Length: 136
Image (cartoon, rainbow, N blue to C red; front, top):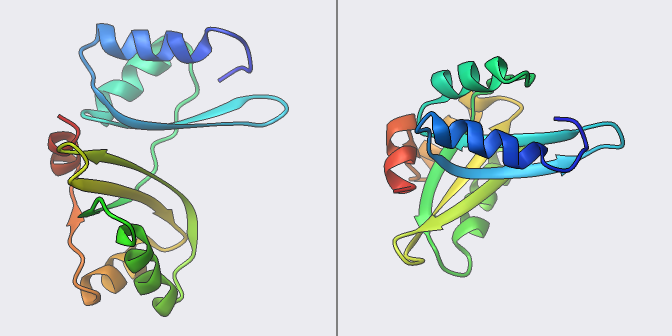
């Protein structure tokens, strides 16, 4: 999105008006533009809505893991990924159920390898529907 006031607000309004829920988002800026990463309850409709409103949209496959929301929850997942030599491109997280659980969202260099490592470490990944439910 352009680095101008009101751009994030416009994105959120457009999704809201289309009854699309944002579970979490990440915002980063460069000198020329901002990068908004969204986890929504309907990524296909969100893509349509945002493109219709003039935004460049890329859909990326991510991997989400649910962990207890306590000190060390993320560290144990990262240790499992480190042990497998998995490259993390970016990550963000959100908590739910009054801080009982957290969802860690990752974009990996190799999602399949990461999913195998997580499964071997005893971590279940979440599908799109489960992520949407966690955000409610």
